Amino acid sequence: MSDRIVVDSVEDRVVHDEANHRYVLMRGDKELGREEYDLDDGVIRFLSTIVPDTGERGLGGKLVAGALDDVRARGDLHLVPVCPFVKRYIEKNEQYQDLLAAPLDEL
Image (tube, rainbow, N blue to C red; front, side, top):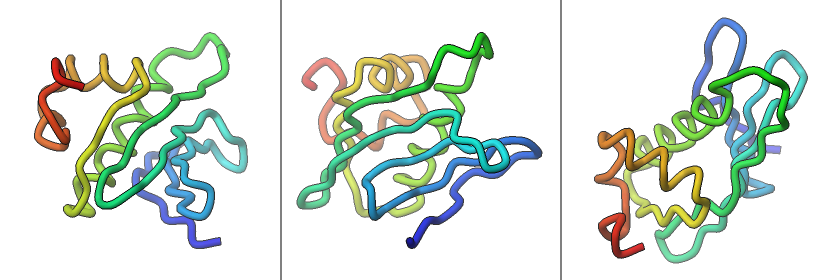
């Protein structure tokens, strides 16, 4: 598997699992959540953000931020946030709006 760590903190890291078209938020060897996507002709569509309700806040945001930072680092992709959570995250975090394939109100 060609996983690549894209965000790493003391406890958590976001890993890009390209073979399965997803980003995974990991704590140690435990999966805390995942962002599923599809990729076609330079457009990455974030389809769903899946984070179990553990009572811990901020895991979804950490996952999405790590995934978006990786999209930015790649530099050759345009984003379509199909997932409502990702769309709201980008609305609140304007530094990611330049990654969009079109303005948010058109997506």
